Image (cartoon, rainbow, N blue to C red; front, side, top):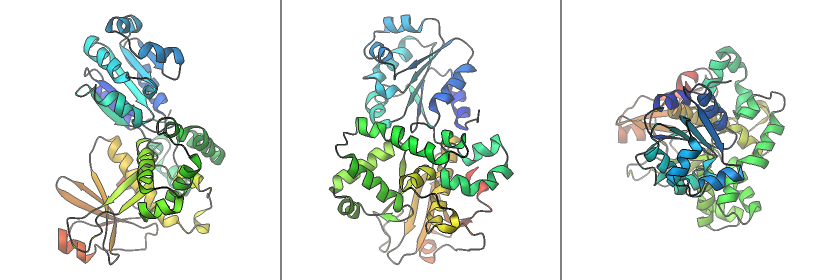
Length: 374
């Protein structure tokens, strides 16, 4: 089994008399992770799979007495795919408050229903963790740095979903299966998507625009829906952990773009599968954008997996001066530029340093990237 970095954070929170909530896209390994934790847990454990109809019916409105009877002498309770249960937050609250010796771990593939069903009832009673596809660092720890460096271009093309990584030679069919059977399931189930063909056009448009500023007005005209629906669909894609949005950084300088956004995919393999382009680097005109997407998503995985917190931005002016990525933490800005070619150089734009100070500016390339993402 490939060890997940976030498991260290999860194990450190066991026994704190709070529920542990693990969220992430479908097929990223949530069930495998919690089963592994359960197998090493001292004491009896029980796993309830909420895809089972009888489990759902028993958990929807139980009393604390019924829950005690169902849990019995078990000390660890895993509730898998909890977004399937109505009012699941109330049920978990009853367990945390009335059966404090039981550690509850909850998984969910969508924050759509979890947000409505869990977060408010469990205020002050939970720790939340996000699980993403494998990270580059996790694969290095499982094999070797040499092996993963050799596979770097391959990983950028096909991504890091566990089923893809674990089935070399069958990557394209595995990615297509994830997209067609799993990835958008919660969006269609909970998001009230009435025209899947329009949603399909939108996500393809987003996949073709990674690394570029995204105009919701232009997307609405391109896809044929109003701007409010574009906002709704992109919000759904964020809440099901398929894409993430970077906002532009601005402190009210007149020439800065203040409301611009860039949208990236958590997994570049998913992005390439959506547009059905797995051509090698030499045959692509989007490799620079793919590299940028890969590095940013890997950095954000690393920060999340190690329990750190950051604010993320990009920066651009009307004169097209730009910085690919800015992290804000500890009261300071940390600007980065991403270049695949190690021979390509860049410097901090003078407009930025004049407005905000001469911060340490780094160029991340295909030779020095490991220090940035691991």
